[in-house]
Image (cartoon, rainbow, N blue to C red; front, side, top):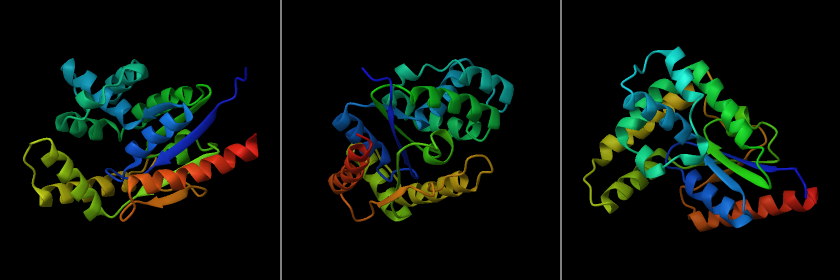
Length: 215
C-alpha cells in the first residue's frame, strides 16, 4: 500500500463548469472530491444559524475552524442568501487561512483528490501535479445559470444574473487576498463552446499523461 496521494487542482469563475468537471474526474479516478466554495458557504450558514454577525472576523474564523468537510450538502448550501453571506466572510484573511488549512489537509487523502475553487492551483495546492483553469464567457455562464434556475421551475431574470456574474468576477479577481487567476502552469479549458464531455476528455488525456509519467 502506498501513502502517496495525487492532487488535481481546478480553478475558475462561477458557472464555468468546473464543479461538474471536478466530480466527473473524481468519479473516473476514484479520488476524493472537495468543492472548496462550499467550505465558505458552510461557515456562513453556521454563522447565520447561530445568529452571529457576518462582520466579526474573529468569530468567523472560530466557526471556520469547526467546519466539518465530510458533511457538506450542496443542495442546502447553494441557497442564494448563504452565497451572499459567504461572499462577505470569504474576503477575511483569517477565515481564508483557516479554511485553506482544512482544504490542504483534505488534499492529502489517498489515493488522490480533486479540489475545485478559486485559488487551488495558486494558493491551496500550488504543488499539485495537474492544474486546470476552467473558464467561459460571462454571457455563456449567465445563460447556464439562467437555464438551471428555469429548469427547476423557478423564475429568473437573465440581465440580473448577467450583472451578478460580472460583479462576482470583479470581486473574485480583484480581491487582495488570493485573487482568482490561473496558475502559471495550469491547463486552460474554455468551455464557452465546449461540451462538458469534450472538456472531460481533454482533462482526462492530460491527467493520464501525467499519471503515466509518474508511474
